Image (spheres, rainbow, N blue to C red):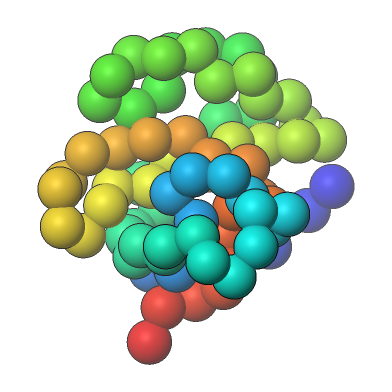
Length: 81
């Protein structure tokens, strides 16, 4: 799978849930700071991201909180304005 986003991209994303969580889920914006392609600690909390080449996890630094958390591609809505 070729990642559709890259490090340095500013994106809009669902911080909780994902694509299936519906329109009533709030969104956030942030910058992709890393892309994980294997299971390892990710983000400022050090939580293990279950990543692989086929299902990478995108580490996003939230614009408001500056916290870094790993997300599946399905959580990312697209590039931020």
